[in-house]
Image 1 (cartoon, rainbow, N blue to C red):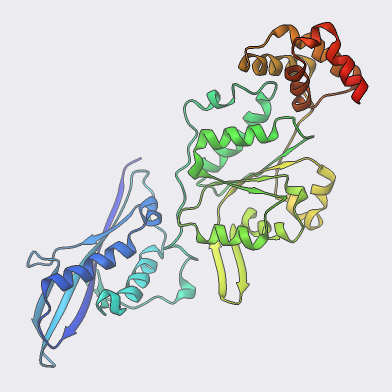
Image 2 (image 1 turned 90 degrees about the vertical axis):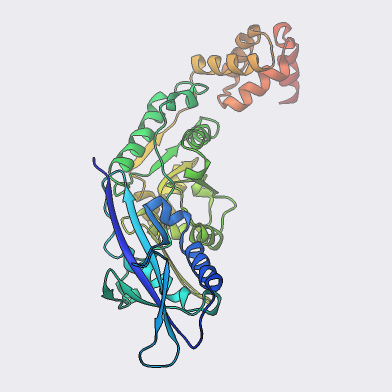
Length: 375
């Protein structure tokens, strides 16, 4: 795919009764460019910088024909470049111009007026006609790394689970995130759901993933955090989503459906933001999950991925890994699993605790006797 580039000339005008110092104009220009250029614009492909007038400078001065004094013009260039061939949205330039027009008119920026774009007189576009927050929103670049599999080598028996999440991520990436097939990882505690989420964050990078805990997140806090981020991640992870108060998760209905937006009216005004996020949620209690928002929230998760307790073979691999970390003996594995089988213990966390706490005492049966006495 070939590069796509377009460039626009933006002109600011200011009448003055006396000559302005070059240092003052340069300061106005620097402040305006610094306040306009941000990571969000850069991610989408925009760069705003000083342009050269026909005289070769970034601003000109001429006599004011209708009044004593002068007319100053300041020239700015807005350049859009993408190496994936994508063009900007229909109202992106208008949104940027509206932002610059508002800021340049303030005293801190010298009280300039945006008067022209590309040889046409500038006419502001009504805010309602602009894409919501198009000038302010951007997303972290998110790609599947070549060494993806290396981030999951510590997990056993979960190959299909990991692949399903990866397939959903790839479907989002290949469609510019129009398709977001959210994943609910459903199963009892200790079956690897959270491990997969942590590994995905490591693989994609911290900037690409935002995390919320269903047991501790408030709707106001989540909305505030998502609304204030200059660059949004592409992936949102919610741990134990079914344990959140029902009202807390209501904001997710808009985030996860086709609208992909946050809407909230507060005493300070309206919050509206596009949020094309891909969600991975962990679920311990599927029955509670299905009841949230009368089933509306669960319906957003089109990939429901179920986990079982690990088999004895998988538990053996897990214990081999954990015992090696403490330079213990693999002889502990057999007695540990025998005791767990006899007592119906399948939570890997508890199995690991028995093996590492029991150690050599498992070989003599002393630790198993201690467990029996203290059950």
